[in-house]
Amino acid sequence: MNAPDADAPVETPWAGKWIQVRKQGRWEYVARARGIRAAVIVAVDDEDHVLLVEQYRVPLGRNCLELPAGLIGDTHDGDTVEEAAARELEEETGHAAERIDVIGEFYSSPGLVSESFTLVRAQGLTRIGEGGGVDGENITVHRVPLAGIVDFVAAKRAEGLAIDVKILLLLAESILG
Image 1 (cartoon, one colour):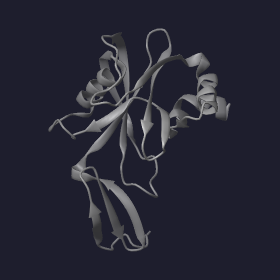
Image 2 (spheres, helix red, strand yellow):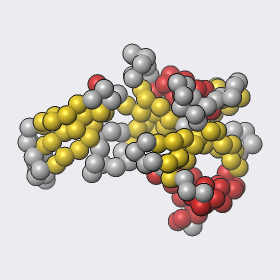
Image 3 (cartoon, rainbow, N blue to C red):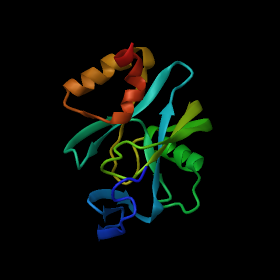
Image 4 (cartoon, rainbow, N blue to C red):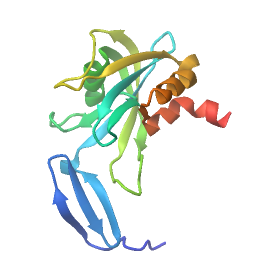
């Protein structure tokens, strides 16, 4: 199947430090600059609690509830997915993982952005610090029982938080069941 605009040249009308606006045929989209990718971490401890983070997101104008995540290759050249995920988990949540397993690559909004993220599972969690992020990220860490995740997300939504689409991973059974 020949997709319209697939062979059109890619133009970059604007580029910043972190993102680029691209145009290809009739399509306009956003791409990460410099080949930067993202790692998203599903971290469930031995007591069946999942680690979530809450932080202010400028594009949304409010706090957002998310799985811990971070960029690969933004400040550490040669980072593997596992190394970046382990570092981000520690920085954001204050937890170290004995093992990081890659689940796969996913796209959250393929009609608007070319960015993908690699979903990983963190296992063997040990709390080693407070978390909260770096450089004024002001991240709030939530340790939530998986059995109560539906109510927790509903309560956060009622408080006015945005809910990252990746949280659907934790809500799938309640939506599809």
